[in-house]
Image 1 (cartoon, one colour):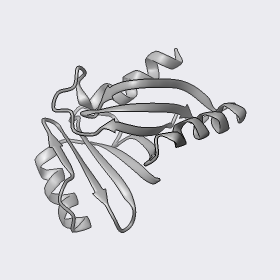
Image 2 (image 1 turned 135 degrees about the horizontal axis):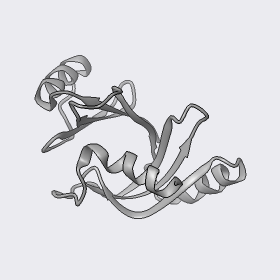
Image 3 (image 1 turned 135 degrees about the vertical axis):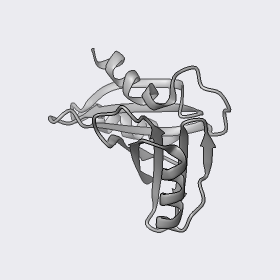
Length: 141
């Protein structure tokens, strides 16, 4: 597993240049208004959403699970702790097909636990900068 940090950025090209240099790592995936990095050291999945009108730089935090079976383990633990807000199966978001779990802390900070089934989808049905946050809002309302 690895920690995910999802940021809203004003300009995706400038952000790709900056974070590529900062972490000395090229992007793993680039799509229109979207990029992600799989950084080895420190282990981090950095996700960038071009969202120039965002009020916050932080989009959400997450935990990427490498083994699909870990979703079930995390789901039980989060449910037992009373933290589960929503579950998504076969969600299409961030140009990938994923199973997801969502929690929110008492400050409304969103945490996404996810496992990717197909990490190379070209098109997404939703505006990428909003797919993660919109899904949580719809499922927890």
